[in-house]
Length: 452
Ligand code: GUN
Ligand code: ZN
Image 1 (cartoon, protein in one colour):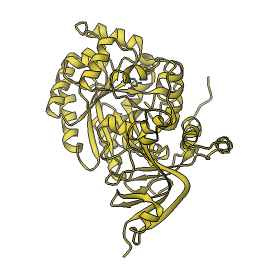
Image 2 (cartoon, rainbow, N blue to C red; image 1 turned 120 degrees about the vertical axis):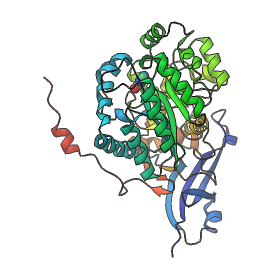
Image 3 (cartoon, rainbow, N blue to C red; image 1 turned 180 degrees about the vertical axis):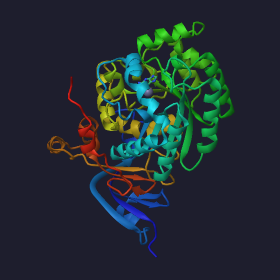
Image 4 (tube, helix red, strand yellow; image 1 turned 90 degrees about the vertical axis):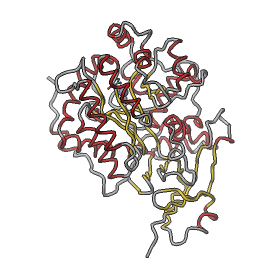
């Protein structure tokens, strides 16, 4: 009988540490004619093709030369119920939430809708090279169950949670302190640690949670210290002002979360743009992780994330799409816009650090670098195959590229889903596979009315 071993051949790039400069070759392993041997969803050997094939036995061999293999991308902040409101026009954060986002999320009470969207969501992620997502589901348990069920079917390592929100939101989109606690607890018991799933306790943000809900969230965090916690922080000036009105006793926005005991290295804080010095000190002290969401910050006009400022205090920043305020599922396009946001502040995002960030760097921010984010033997076989000549423009540019860093920068700036040749999740190829449910474009188009 044929074994279920798989050997992938191609150019391999895997990071060992965060590159400290554009030519920090000590931070990564690069093998020109490399191979990975995969068994039971795990990478069991990495090396030159000659070395690895000697141990491969009757493994199936897939030759991806001359494409580049890296660890699958990790998206550390994305809203699963917002897939159908990406590119909604005109508003900044609070209006955008009230006009588009909240009405859309009410639809996820329906099991069949949530299940259908979960399938489309994960198709989109893997087609863009993302193998791990950290998602906000809607307030409804149904949406979190749909998210985890679909991920489980695909054997993806995912993190997620139902949002808790008990005020400043429409009917059909509010829980209560007690039901938010009970539903989250039930979901933790069902999903946290099951297969490749982790639960994130998810108070949406200070504006949509009463102090009573924050109190119960703090209790939940205390009872489940190994769960992640995620929320939003200081994305927009009006949001900050409203938050401080709602929590007049708080020293600043972060203090709302801090006073309820939510901060730790398990805490992911989306945006974290307009921060006071005290807040930055508290982030550093508690090890909490700000999450940079470049396409979203530009789309909503939220502001410029101070990556270098936070890093200089020893803070570990993650990076993410923040779909549906984000405008691309692609972590490559996320890097592209991130590069420009940092340029505006005279900061640099060089390609080695960029590729480290969306793979091992985000894994480190999640404390999961022993499982995902590299091509190291003993880690899970979540792998992306990159084609740096995927478009005419990229191919033309690549005619003049001579170094790995140049090639990575072409991918970082010009790349998107077209540059994703193949994706492996726990060793199984995803692109164009039978699990894919393609979108029905004809139906979508016929549903669009002309503008009045
Ligand atoms: N703050 C609270 N909820 C959200 C959300 O859904 N998207 C963004 N970008 N910010 C938020
Ligand atoms: Zn968000």
